[in-house]
Amino acid sequence: MTHALNALRQQHAPPFNGLTLHCKERLTPEALQKALTCVVTYLAEQFPNIPLEFFHCWVEHDSFLNDATPTSWETLQSEIASTDVLTQLFDNADTWVRHAFVAEGNAWLLRFHIDDDPNVSPRLGDFDLTIAIEHAINLHGMLQKLPLGEFEVTFPGAYFDLKEYGPSLLEVSGAFPVGRVTLNRPEVHNAFNERLIHELTTTIRRLGSTSWIEAIVLTGNGKSFCAGADLEWMGKMVGYSHDENLADAKTLQTLFETIAQCPKVVIAAVNGAAMGGGAGLVAACDYAIASDKATFAFSEVKLGIIPAVISPFVVEKIGLGAARAYFTTGRRFDAATALRLGLVQEVVPGEDLAAAVNSVLTDACSAGPKAIAASKQLLHGLAEGTADTAEAIASIRVSPEGQEGIRAFLEKRKPVWKRDS
Image (cartoon, rainbow, N blue to C red):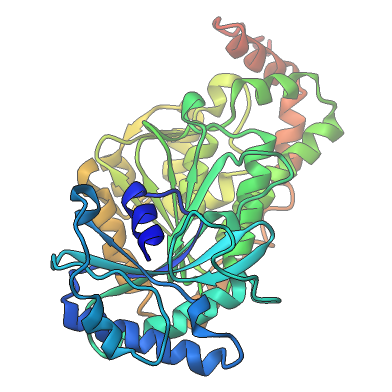
């Protein structure tokens, strides 16, 4: 027990790559006892052949910082006297209890205490993260009914991250029943490249096919939401053949279709500039909330190309008239204009963006998941009107005007357009 206490005191905020079930509010000692009793009873029923001393509990507490000593251990022990669960309970009422499923290598462990000894908890055979999440959600429902406070299940983004490319260009995290995806290329304003498109497409698919996810929030890290295509990717386009440009455009088309067809509600939290394909990303989402400082543009014509792939999604949101005005001029517009056009559904001060998103999530997650999926299927006839868009952008990219526009942008000069006589 002393060893565990020392480990806890040394790790007030230890790095954690697992799934947690925790209370979002203060727990009184009495409430904590009831919560732990609920958890231990559930574990004993679900895992009758696994000794309960293998399931550990830890209580995160401000007193880690002042080296407080536990004074209520005996009270808690008497409440769940039939177990050997290791629990630390401190006097201070500002106590959070976390029940954690922690990853170790490729096997998932169920454990209720963060310790620096890797042998504290045994491997539980076929007990993987998917099963762990199911049990955490079951416990979440039981605890919510007691009631003791507002509990939350959080899951590790590693469950959805792609490993084949090394470190992900996305940050994925979430709390049941919401998945959160953050574009994480702030140094290039979260611009698209082939890898980001692939990762985002695959991650949205995984979240969309996960039964316990009911909504997805998409945002950007840093000052921008998404700046469209990045310079290196655009540089490759110049040297691509027509067929290569066609295949390249189809990957972006697939991303937007994946978002629009995702059976979950996809909410864009537009934290900053959304340009070109970034504005198209906003349009592909079901609901968009923008910071009042966000700016938008369909700027492709300034590069000598056209917003072909994003056009079905944008026109669906803002209509042909507005699309004609902004597609042909490439003019920037502010969040208030985006709201008026219908590209976004709310505009709030930047500091209120998270709260506004949570408000929409409350509504979305209270609806029937199957009804949401059916509604999206009803609304999005994506098979119609999108077949020729990739061909259109591929053709324009290899045209003289498209080549000149992209080259001029890469060379930081004004393009020299050839006018028809």
